[in-house]
Length: 134
Image 1 (cartoon, rainbow, N blue to C red):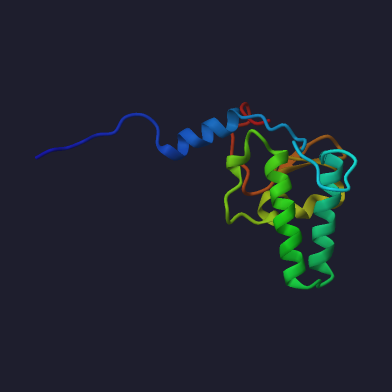
Image 2 (cartoon, rainbow, N blue to C red; image 1 turned 30 degrees about the vertical axis):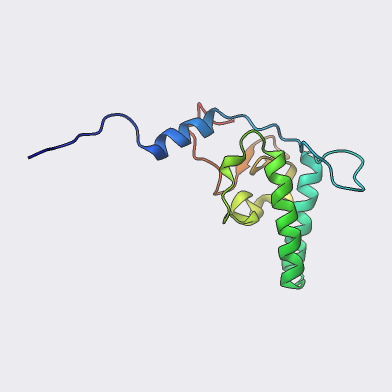
């Protein structure tokens, strides 16, 4: 009888640990046509609020999807070099805690900085121990 035992960490633990050590740039590396400068945390917050308003106001689902796709690409650039956090299927609502948008002063990679200075992250953000969190 052959028994194999595995020592060490699982792949999920290793990838979470690596994600917790990654520090996103929180500024877009590129800018869209017509933009004066690359997207920063204030502009990202404005785009998140626009997304929320489009959904709330019942805008055409296809138009919302196009805006979401463009926003997701911008967020991938904004989160560099930590964009592996963003899976193909993750939604904007999973990336950011939309219930806190009204209290936010700016957005960071997959999170919001509230007016009181605290940072809250979306459900898709890696769950890091408090000492390793950003």
